[in-house]
Length: 375
Image 1 (spheres, rainbow, N blue to C red):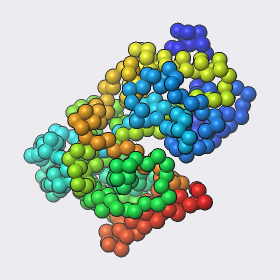
Image 2: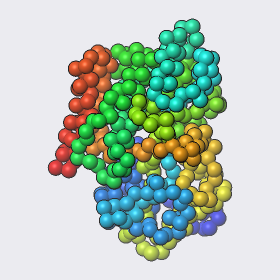
Image 3: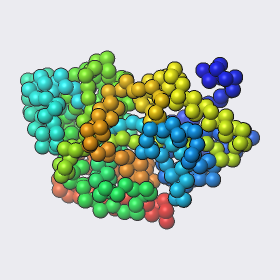
């Protein structure tokens, strides 16, 4: 569309899943390196600092409606800006909740969530559906818990002082709150905790087909379920923290634009023009928003994703946004693998000793992986 309108050619190179950094490194070594690329977290900001143009005061920054998804380096340079954001929490089917004699509006904290969930699970045979979808711990699903649900511990551990870099260690102060929600999900689900290790269950299909009323998931699920569950909504990670009736959804992104500081001034300007067009052109931004869900720009088309609308409404109502502190997980693959192992042992036998192993994986595991990365 842009080329047809302006005559300026645009080439997009897409990396295979899990290979973005390797592909970017290879592309940057070429004679015509990318002028626009992704810096999605603080680790990448350190790695690519020399290649990131300071976007402070640029036309694309002027189009933002929030700076919540911007990434700055240690010197305060604006190295990348979010081009879309997502949210995650607990997706709910209001129709099923009402069939069980409850209302979503009555769920305002962990105790009210627990009341509804345990009642539905206890009457699953009678109702014809259960509370939570399967909580598999295989690689296709475990990230919902070791990455996303884990965020509630990290978020609250910030104690209102948002992390700007990975802390070398955790206190684990809110591990019991993680346990509250995790236990509620795995023990009131379609699949018994002892059968979660190997996976094989399609939680998304279970929710779409009305087999369960709750699913731990994110805004990217909306397009896939809006036909079958058009009135689905998303509620926060209620977990028993004081004041959580003012909690909102977990909102964040690793989808952030950076402009190549080593590109020519002419190419930088052409790139900036393209970025601004993407977020201001009505037809272009409509296509992008329909694909991404929402874009944090003043002139971009409005989102049609209900879950993102839920996130915005919580914020408008004065609820706090749970930022993605989970993005700071050190040596993320190794760290999460240790969590999966510990959680599988706990799922098989929910003993106090096995929960201590989970806490160790969360807390000491963080310190171990931080040292592995930072020395």
